[in-house]
Length: 462
Image (cartoon, rainbow, N blue to C red; front, side, top):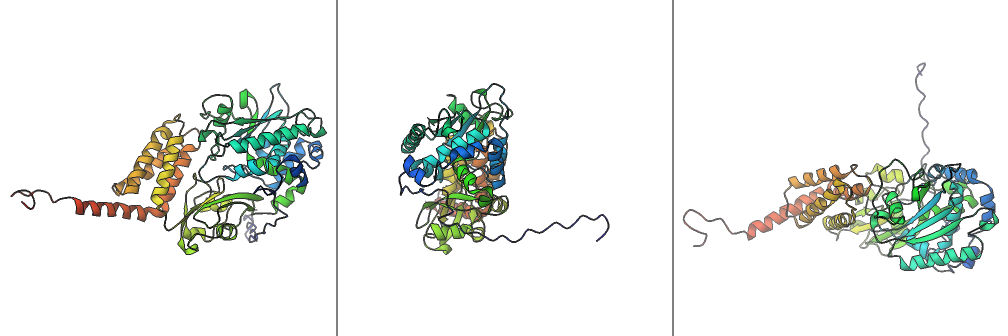
């Protein structure tokens, strides 16, 4: 080797997937088969020596979460330990808050709903531990307005935790005072969007319209009521007590580098057994569907495409689905994303153009209207997609449609604009020939139905 030459980078060993056993699963009552009350939760290991975890100190908790490799489970995938560490170590006189986003509203996404319904004490205990690690005085759990039953279950779990002295003054006997409040939302997707908008949720929590704030300042400095705040997802918080009990190395033993841990996947669409299931990160998409969802309706060869991470990520075609792994980096490499891990399966009987047109309507309807590219662009996307679905368009308009998505993407305060653009981009990327054929078919049918123009000698058939 020449003197001074850079050393050859060390090659990563090939990834070997580690199967998740029932003993490994964090959410042991995901299907509501056992008592969801506090006594049942204690039997399943919740609230076990929580005081000892708190007495280990804030720095130890954050270091363990960092070492575990936990990344946000709400869609953005930001390293959780790092995010928690942004909160001020020393108070400047303002209280700090933890806000938990339970406003699960993205089409196809229903994982957090199962936690609220069937394992609420995991979330409540996680709120105490995460809040303590951040130095927060209270947690606000913002629940989707339509989740009536789920909010009732969560409120009951909070009451039970107070009755057991797990919350409130001297929580769990730790000497730390901590309160948990359940707040019911009013139905706006932007307050809890899986694409990572947290300031819209804070605005709504304060009683204002749920319109995102410009950043900076960031919520860790100026958040709820002008105080330091961390906004995080239900699943992210709910897994933290188990990570601390079992150890960071246990959690990081699942999944590939930078994609560690277990994950809840919500599988829906054209599968034989729609399900929410906990699996290891980096499981293959095909294995996930065939092992847990009973396979694709009509068999794997009948698969057309899959949206792997909720409605805000681009679809991927069957060829890609054969080998792709379900983690942040693998899906990013195929120009999609893990998002909320809501796997939406579509077989060959699906009208892909109509499916994406329906998603375009959703984002048009849910735009708060604050940013011009989103306010004006999402109706244009929907109008163009409606024409594409009928075939009543010109071939050049496919490029126009793509250009509209580019004008929206990256030009808005929050990521709802990106979420509206990406599904359309995925459709054009993988199904442009289908769109072109739809236009050609429409022109062919209407050409046959259109009477011939009149000639110089008179109208046709005169």
